[in-house]
Length: 464
Ligand SMILES: [Fe+2]
Ligand SMILES: [Fe+2]
Image (cartoon, rainbow, N blue to C red; front, side):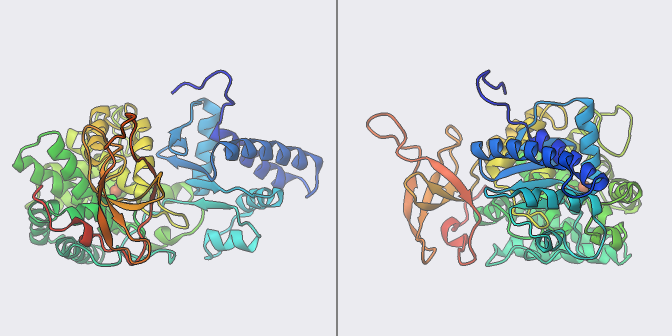
């Protein structure tokens, strides 16, 4: 994307750089030192510029790249790479700043980053104690079934598609058993694969529940079921045959099984991880592959996918396997895995809506993700997938009930009563007015409120 010469360059890295140097200054000079004042002023100006363009500012670091509101930062020089490495050492994966942010809060965050110690208290509680209200820091925790942070529910709440609910329960039991040191239950895994392919994939309600914004901690077992479903969707889109699809679903379901082997104190640690701890988390790939190789009755590619799913198409990522390019099956699971991770609720922060997730993935195409697969995936789920709650430019609340392949930004909607959350009839946003323009646009996607039952909108299930 090119920026017109006249427009100011909005660089999220400037915020990160500002915070990093403020952090250093706050650690080396007494409070009130003019150098701190000068840096604060610079940082304030950068933030004011960014807030002017969009409020809130959302800066995310995803697999080593920086994104501002879903758009990758243009600059990729050595110094920035160092800064990113620093941030990830601090355990920060995202920073959200809302309008009204005060100078004192910036300083408090910088000091917090400098003095951060593990106190058992959550990052958000520690920031609140420092009177920081307009800035939140988030971290993508390697969540597993044994621990979660208390901000969100631990699994999807509300009435679920029954087959999806059963799949989650089966996955949960399998994961808990594996974490407890029992051998992986291949029979249950096989049943689960069949159930996902022949039942869950045929329910629009289940797909809606998987694709829309998630209001729950994405514990490993939920994440795995969702990644399996998304991989299946993408596998069908690229025309894989039935046997290959079954192998793909199995591999996707088990891609993170190594997380059950990571020591709980690392998973639970609220603050920065040191190098050894990060390496331990990265080892979920090799640990997973080892478990899977030792398990009889699995498809031979299943351990390969577990090993390779954090590797990019150019041979970057972990574990270090030289320049080897991941197997196409691993590449499919990578795409599904990243979408799932981005749209999942982050510890201490709200989830990212699907349309932003699609933008982020588009920017990762080529370097980290297979470009063709990303295109197919975004085409399949669209910016506003089935099950998304949206608002139109006419201020109507509505649920996406059918996507439109030719006009992906203009799906069919069911209007939602704002008070009862009941359906109120359908509209087609691809319809045009006599002037030729669209009668409606979607302006926003929203998290689904508690009382909304997707099944009332999406059932009866349509065969996929
Ligand atoms: Fe993973
Ligand atoms: Fe994953």
